[in-house]
Length: 296
Image 1 (cartoon, rainbow, N blue to C red):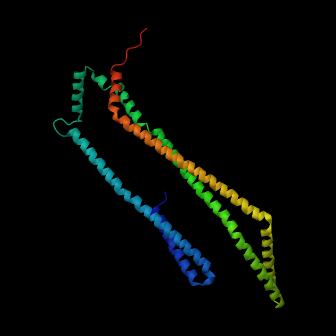
Image 2 (cartoon, helix red, strand yellow):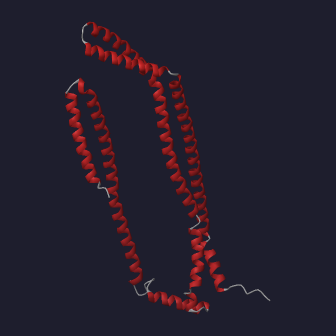
Image 3 (spheres, rainbow, N blue to C red):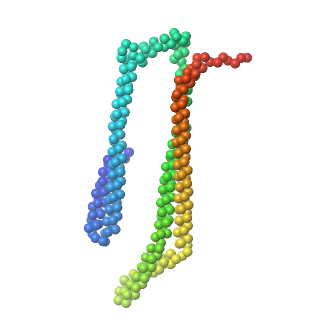
């Protein structure tokens, strides 16, 4: 099991290290500007992540108090039950009181003690209570299942959105990339001529290599297949995102429907609870007074 305190300490250590790295890079001037920016981005990200984790840790640990209160309430409830079992001349749930109640019912009903405490009566009452308690079981299971599906579809939708963003970004970035390569080709050509005339052969050759590389990239960009690929990539990502949104909506509808069905089942449980004693009494009567066997 991962220790939260250790992980927070490690994250804070990284935060301090990255802050120092960012400060050092920033002090080095323009040459390290990109490194400094990346380090400051990392600092901001880990600060946010650490703050979020510390907030969750505080919330979770605060629930210790809730557990303590629940256990204290449980102890108080047990104390009340023990008082009902042991205090006074006739504690209402003491063994002797239960024995006396059984004797009274035997005398009043004509039933035997064995019949009163028999499994058949308990089974009949339990069947009524189980029928009420399990009314919403299937609805709860269905809701849990569709909630899992909803979480999956939400992630799928986010992934599809990211893929569509990437496809659109690639298309939107292409004009600037072409313009940049054109500038590089023109500048490298002028540099190659100028440096060759000045007798700086290595630098002239380098400029020529850069010139040819930029020309090659421009030639590649001019191929119709590149534009087709950008369009195809976007179409694919767009359609996938639309499909993911449709799946997400269907999952949301399924959750709403499952929540509605659960509410209906719980309303039915309330209604059944209202007639529970009458239904249980009917079940008990059926055990005590079973219908006569069919005639020959």
